[in-house]
Amino acid sequence: MKIKRIVGLAAVAALALAACSDTGGGSGDAETTEGGTSQGIVTAWGSEPQNPLIPTNTNEVGGGKILDLMFSGLVHYEADGKAVNEVAESIETEDAQTFTITLKEGWTFSNGEPVTSSSFVDAWNYGAKLSNEQLSSYFFEPIEGFSYDVDSDLTGLKVVDDTTFTVTLTQPESDFPLRLGYSAFYPLPESAFADMDAFGESPVGNGLYKLDGEGAWEHNVQASLVPNPDYAGDRTVANGGVVVKFYETLDGAYNDLLAGQLDVLDQIPDSAFGTYESELGDRAVNQPAAVFQSFTIPQNLAHFSGEEGKLRRQAISLAINRAEVTEAIFQGTRTPASDFTSPVIDGWSDSVTGSEVLEYDPEEAKKLWAEADAIAPFSGTFTIGYNTDGGHQAWVDAVTNGLRNTLGISAEGNPFPSFKDLRTEVTARTITGAFRSGWQADYPGLYNFLGPLYGTGAGSNDGDYSSAAVDTLLAEGAAAGSIEEANEKFVKVQEVLFTDLPAIPLWYANATGGSADTVSNVTFGWNSVPLLNEVTKN
Image (cartoon, rainbow, N blue to C red; front, side, top):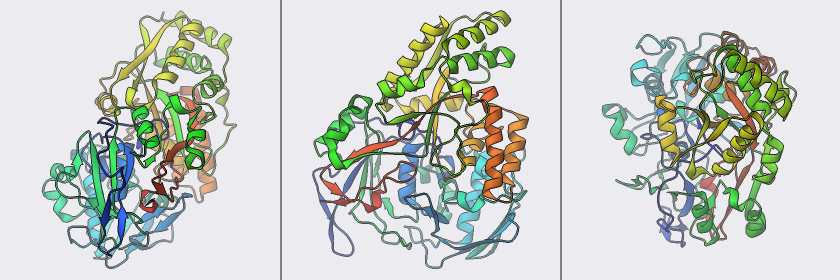
């Protein structure tokens, strides 16, 4: 998701905007499902999506949480990250370059349209096409025919029949099937293409839930979902629906959780880190997750390019006392980063060459900053943009205070009222300083933390970093014959990143959250997102 999702805390922050009142079943309202069973509606914390809900144009957690409830892909991910076929009957290949995908029969969208091979091929072509300017177009780059220069369909996609299509990549990529549960690869009904913007306001999916009628997405307030009776997969829905509520602050959401006006919260405000486990008891969650947090320094920021820029980036990284910040502010819910990925992903290493730049060394930081000043004296204020609705002010204040004290420069936070506001400026490249960033994995692989963020032209490469060495290593890793061989290349990618520091790694975020005593069966998955379809109302 998932930014792409660029999320913030537990997944990278939250877009949240609206009121904290009980607006969707927090009091235990019940609904009778088609099977006649009275099941309560579950309320969950969320955030106002940045864009209309089009799968290939949603790369942040606010929209991603809703889309993942409404759509089913070729595969889905279990709680531990294992990929399991869902719409796909089989995904077969003999060379890891050409794949034959066969669909299960009987799948339909919630408007009655059948899910066919064309539902996937047309959706992927739309997402990849240059003129459509989709944020997740980068995910289709491995498929033959993808171009950043020519407005054309993907020649590597071929419909064989209604339940079979083939995918031909430009090179072998062993982990390609693992990616296919991510939202960029969701199918679309034929009706979507008549007016994609309108579709994005009221999307029609093939997943566990559907929107609860016209106007069910109340902007800046909530999105109301009900079980989709046409869902044809093996997963089950244990409740009468989900209302995703948008909040102005995490504190407001947490207070509602304690009061039983919110059922599930997957991000704890920093003000409650010291108390939430005792207040929630066995309903508290604090577990490792595939979430990496950082702040990005744009390549075009004055004083931060070339040799001067490398020196300043290293100095800033060395001036941050990650251990102190994670202990004082996050109280054991974060772990200082030692790489650019996540410890829960296969192939992770805590000893990547160059990672010593993440150690707190104020004297070395001062020395490198002085060397940079000898090239061109620094002037102005170093800022870190952040969204105030996501619980980031405390750490931004701590980091900028450390930069002021260690480097003797002017440094401060640059607050935005919502994640959507921050993302709008970041996406438009109008932000004038550094900005908080991070990654909640889309699928459980090292490449997912690297390619979308640091590959040249990648959809979530918001700092516009470009390195021929990184691009070559990413391609070699993707083409490796095994996941183990691929991971060796991805470790080498990080060696280059530690030299260039397009983003400053900060810490890994645990999945922190909890549930009210109004619900049961709350499980948080490998990517820190609760499995809301399994939650039952008490």
